[in-house]
Amino acid sequence: MTLIGVLGGSGTVGRVVVERLAGWGTGPLRIGGRDRDRAARACEAAPGVPAEPFRVDLDDAAALREFCAGCDVVVNCAGPSYRVLDRVARVALAGGAHYVDAAGDLVAIDALAGGGAAGLDHRAAVFSAGLMPGLSGLLPRLLAADGPLARLDVYVGGAAAIGPLSAVDALLTRGPRFGTALAAWRDGGIVPAALKPLRSVSLPGFRDRVHAWPFLSAEMSRLAAELGVAELRNYTVYVTEAIPEALARAWADDGAALDAHVPAVVAAAGADLAATGPYYAMLFQAVPRDPAPGRPRRLLLRTPDSYALSGVVAALTARELRAGTIPPGAHAASEVLSASRTLAALRDDPLVTGVELS
Ligand SMILES: NC(=O)c1ccc[n+]([C@@H]2O[C@H](COP(=O)([O-])OP(=O)(O)OC[C@H]3O[C@@H](n4cnc5c(N)ncnc54)[C@H](OP(=O)(O)O)[C@@H]3O)[C@@H](O)[C@H]2O)c1
Image 1 (cartoon, rainbow, N blue to C red):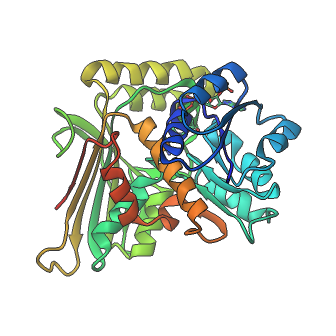
Image 2: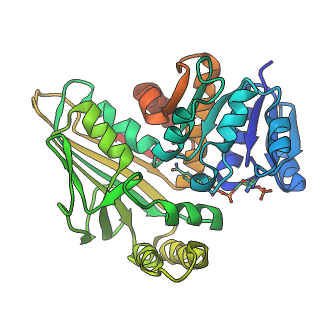
Image 3: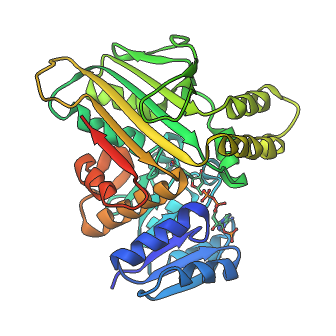
């Protein structure tokens, strides 16, 4: 039987990883975190499979080695991801396990691959196995399956509670390695200051009027380059302007450490939730270069809980690793998962409340 370790399995994302893996009967689980009692409660949410709680702080190298020992796959849902980078991946690979990270980005992949990690020649490490990054870079591939796109517009967002740990990640998602605000992708390159925020607009799948902020993420630039999309516009969608305002205040404040702004980001997400209730939508709109009849032009996916859905994606990635469909090396999930198989699995998942491909 293969053992899967879920580090951070008692958290918002990690709990769903545990629930799905247990539900699919993938085998025994080891659930790690600093608080063993919390991990033990997460084990109770995994009926039908042996699940072992494990006290581990990822800052403690010896404890992390012990946690990873004997695992076939380690799924990391502990963060903040942009401070953890490749630390857990290195220990998992050195111990002989494959690795999945619900977050991480190009910076983490480069840190791992660039440093020549032991084990990468015969094991895989898959980062960005969540909703965004993750599904955001994977699902639009379905619209390009029958030929290249002249244009792709991406809108991802809604209202979700943000915990303090994820708020740190939101505050750290900044700088050219993560993406460029207000930029678009055009004819093979990044065009700075190409777009303006769309304030108070109606978008299919989103409730009432929303605010869409252009942010050309590293994931989207790679997608556009790989698929040869002539123009790509990527927007993060907010139900109020509270979160972009909280982030802008933090980034303008040179005097304080970013962590001082965590409560403001958490509160801003709370204000969004109060405004509309929890919901999230991913809308992809494509213009094919060759507009043959019958080609899909729009994909819309809805979920009440973006964090929980990230857990589903991380669990699906672990399942693919176990099935041997992902080659060795360091990857982004959107570049190694099958878009059609993932969408088929999501259609059956209770956390997906709607999929329209038309
Ligand atoms: N790609 C995406 O779309 C996406 C979406 C949502 C979240 N994420 C990412 O997923 C990660 C988890 O987010 P979350 O909201 O689930 O966080 P969370 O609810 O705070 O859960 C964090 C989990 O990690 C454990 N943990 C925290 N620090 C640890 C440490 N030093 N050593 C060991 N375990 C530790 C916590 O347990 P203890 O407190 O007991 O240690 C808990 O189980 C974040 O990095 C976030 O950015 C990605």
